[in-house]
Every structure is written in C-alpha cells, then in structure tokens.
Amino acid sequence: MAQPAPTVMFPVPRRAAGPRHLVVMGVSGGGKTTLAMMLAGKLGYVFAEGDEFHPQANRDKMASGTPLDDDDRAPWLASIQKWMTAEARVGHSTVVTCSALKKKYRDVLRGAEGRTVFVHMAPPTDLTLDRMKHRQGHYMPPSLLDSQIATLEELEPDENGFKVTNTGSPREVLAEVLDQLKDY
Image (cartoon, rainbow, N blue to C red):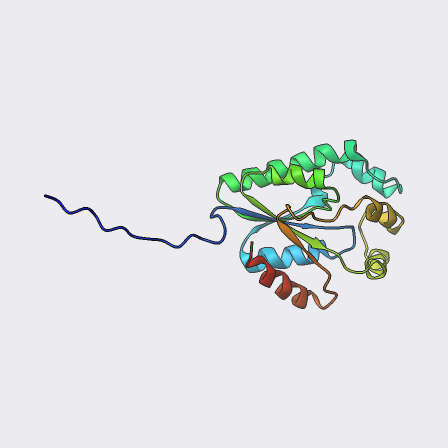
C-alpha cells in the first residue's frame, strides 16, 4: 500500500502576488512626479506621467485657468486604467502619477488588472503653492490649486493606500514611502 505524500505547509503571503500599481496621487505641485520617478527607479517598475494621458483639450482648458470637471476627467482616467491593465497583462508593475482627487476617480484606476495602491502626497498648501509658482513648463497654473483642494476627497479606510505629509528631502520622502509600502 502506497504511503500518502507528506503535507507541506506554506506561509500565507501578506499580500497577493502579481503586478502592483502605485498611483502617486494628490493636488498639482505636491511632489508626485519626483517621488514616482524615484519609486520606479528603486523598484524597477514601469513609470508613466499621468498628465501625458490628458487630451490636448484638457491641457488647453487647464492652461486657460479653467478647472476640469468629471466629464473632462473620465476619458483621461480610462486611458490611465487601460495602460495599467496592459502593463499588468505582460507582468509589469507600474508607478503612475495621477491627481485621483475623488474616490470615484480612484475606483476607475482600481479597476485595472493587478493590485492598486494609492500613495497620497499631501504636503502643506503653502509649500505646494510655492512649488507651483516656481516650476516651469507646466500647463497647470497656481490659480487652480484651490479648486483641486476643494475637489480632493481623502482616502477612505476601505481604499488600499496611505497619506504622506513628509516635507523632507525627496530621499527622505522616498524612504518613508518604501517603508510604508512593506504593508501593501
């Protein structure tokens, strides 16, 4: 009579395997691009700047000082989600910048294949405004910061993510985020 094979127990991983999408979110001027590029380099993830997914009409609207509305954002968010899914299907984890100001916007992004984690960059408003005033070559004027702040909905407890208020150097912020990502 054959002996049954021994039972081997494996520990349950803390998080699911497979592609992970890090959405670095928050209002314009919050340091999303700087952090996202550093994360992508450190983790070996594919990087995308969410602003590059905006159609020209959205860019023109913002450049004229007019805030985007939900209808303007819908195709933009859908294109980011489509990109995230395409990358996940070939086994790539990603880092993408996206304001993701409302929960319903984050719901669209969360619909991508793979695991989505939101990293909410939230420095003080005065620092954010100062950054916006001194950056060059961006179509988002500082005059739209108040509309973004008014639109922003904080991450809710059921959303996979965390808030970063660190105002230290980019390396210090990166270290904090990498430490927090261990739980995701």
